Image (cartoon, rainbow, N blue to C red):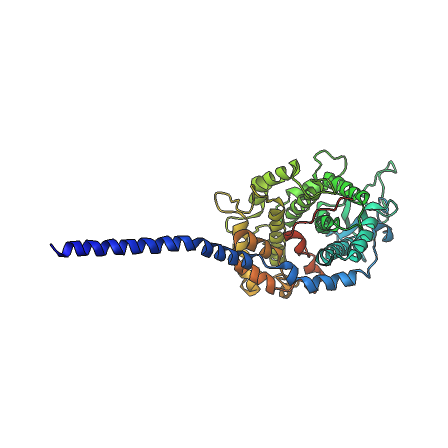
Length: 433
């Protein structure tokens, strides 16, 4: 009998000690959890400003020496419209062996727009890093030449992009002598992709006094008109944007990325921070109802890209554009990052499938690209965005190690954004004058 009280007493003391230790651990656990969460956030959200600092300022320094090259400065003898209308040519595959191939294609507008899409975002990123108004003022010069000044501004449409040319042709017009008889093709809509990052850059430049309120209103109006052209259901001319929208490959992804960017920019008053609008809600619905099913297989591949002669490049291109779409569409209480269909398709599956091949392109299980396979993958913005969305540090580490600027223009064109700083940071509020 004498042992039981001692045992009970010891048991009581041990229980009390265990309780106190457990309580202490519970009290200490929140700080540990927060520390772990902070470490995870740091590893999945790399400091883009620090990583790209020298690259941004080096590019901006070069672009300070580059003057604007609007469309009107690059006339084409074959353009059936006005000097303010974008025009580019594509070779047509002819069944007639006697049909002459075009001696050269007019691509000056395409190349100028692509260069414009590199210059303004780089200057905006440099201004964001330094608050140096030189960068904003030079960006304003380019923006004014393309979008504001009446004598040089581009008309907000791409009705004559990717015109098929079987050989040397003269300008052609309809029998009434007024309406141009030739139009572009829906594949040309993708040539407007550089405009998406320009729209992303303008709110960062708005913090500078280099852009006046009237400038911002004019820019807002131009992109609103372009967005209307991209989304109009009833259109008297060729329905090129609708055909691009319904494509189940990188053309459809390009349409989606562009429209999301323009809708984001035009959602709010040009002098205030961005806000939500009905178009963004509709695009969020379209992404879930149509885009995922049309683009992504249950295994995470992009089936329509796998049949192209540059399947790896085009798959990465689509992956980046859809990741940018998720970045633009996702808001605090309505994210599309985790949306998946019942049989699996979604962005999580897409990045999971492609990630091993981004690490080592030699593992790509399909035919190697016909062109520039050795230059791939390049630094893919999808890695940066997905690292943040899915809390995957390895995506961020890989993004940091990859070269950001491939030497080939063909590969560089398939990286849909070049200043990720502008995509992961909120633009500052414009000062009230």
